[in-house]
Length: 306
Ligand SMILES: OC[C@H]1O[C@H](O)[C@H](O)[C@@H]1O
Image (cartoon, rainbow, N blue to C red; front, side, top):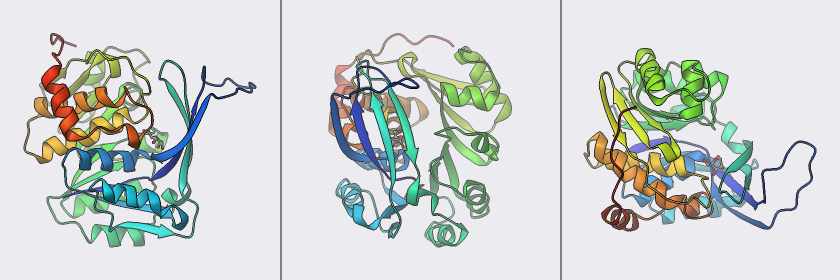
């Protein structure tokens, strides 16, 4: 069982001709509300991939439909608390090129404290995996408590903040970062080569398995001196929202299946490539059978070196 300490958001998604600029008033040409939150998306992706995942989350009582949706997808929601606070939500603009900009209101996601985390931690056994992102609070406490209990920590420092960069990341067994997160963690300038980012990450976190996702430039796995490259899949994105979450959920489910890093990367990349061809966050996450079929149909490009 993997325990995912993660946000649950209601995503308000606006289709726009371009991302709104400061001082501009822009009319959207599409709007809908769906389930989102990096935590919920990652749990849902893991469950759709066939993984065993228990979500630790907090949600406004009036939005129980979001918990029901997670449960219907196979997520264990016994530790999703319905509370008398507003749910977290996100205002998401998606432009005609599939790029997005996201504004978050944390709401109930920021209601965690040491007492309710202790109750959740009591459900975990030594050797279990604990996944976290950076949309909930109390992460320093969680890292310390998880380490003391012998849990394996997987962390996705998204959205990246100065506080997340200061966490004791060496406590992580597995770290998922995208380009901008890696640049902040390493202090390297924007646009740095993948090889430079990987070198700097290895030097800061020599024992941590690190997965660096680069969107259209593929993804890398590394631990110590070992590296594997996953080539990009040639797709035209409609909406990249939750692509990273889909990747992480599928990667962890493959890991839970006993797969090695190359197979985990391949499955995760195929799922994310399918997801970006659909609109929405949770609703864009594909089912395992679709991913398996896509993997069979798709020939990856030739691997190269960073
Ligand atoms: O990663 C995508 C997610 O980021 C924000 O948390 C939104 O809720 C959205 O679902």
